[in-house]
Image (cartoon, rainbow, N blue to C red):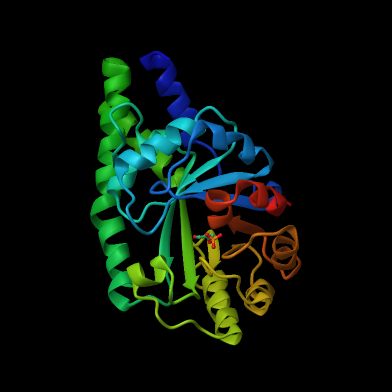
Amino acid sequence: MNKGQEFWELVKKSTGFGPNWDNINHITKIDPEKGLSSSDLEYLEGTDAVMVGGSDGVTAENTAEVLELLDDTDIPVILEPYSGEHVVGGNGKTNNFSASDYTAVASVWNGNEENFKGKHEQFFGSELPAVKQELYNEIESMVGDGLTGRAAKNIAGRGLDNKLLREAYIVQNPESAVAELTEATEPVDSETVGQIAGAVENFFDNFDILYIEYSGMYGDPEDVEAAAEMLEDTTLLYGGGISSEDQALEMLDSGADTVVVGDSFHEDPEEYRDTQV
Ligand code: 1GP
């Protein structure tokens, strides 16, 4: 692809309107630390989208390696970084921001306060402007004098906004890496899950996603029911411990819009195939 084509690809990707959740029931979460090989790609045929992210050992480089392989597929790719470096960086060949369709910014509701507020201050106050600047530089280097600085800035800003997905997380497995990272040591009961969902839907209405996260263990469908009752516009994701079709269906029947499967894909791809609903 030459620079001009790259530029228009970037514009095309930048002007989308978010994923069509009606077509996304099953997401595979690929942990860059665990990696992906080309022989794994065939297993992804039945999934509707992939998320690329983890809570430990993720770098800009290992993220780029996964994105590079996914570029050969038509599956929508959502980057889920826990650091701005995973968005701005790459491996010299692949730029992570350009190589993904969306970037999801996770905000853990029941983590510690520093994580909840500090994450936003850091991401929206310094990392996001840095990503915008990076994107602006990228656009400018592609088109040279063909576009004024202001136009390139507008495209960069709009592109970034359209690619961002805001995710509210409720972390329910205190033993998980994400719980350790965000100090989410206090799981909440189903009634509280419903209350959080009500706040996310009605007050913090910039959130695209509410994610009930049981990473590493199969969770309580009552949490999903309680959240689903409160949500209309916000998309409800359930992830954690799914290793069979029955489990995936149970969470979808309980009201999740989409189930997310991680460990099963990395650990037992044949078993994982069964979760694709
Ligand atoms: C992790 O919710 C995802 O963020 C998936 O969980 O790895 O337990 O499938 P598992």
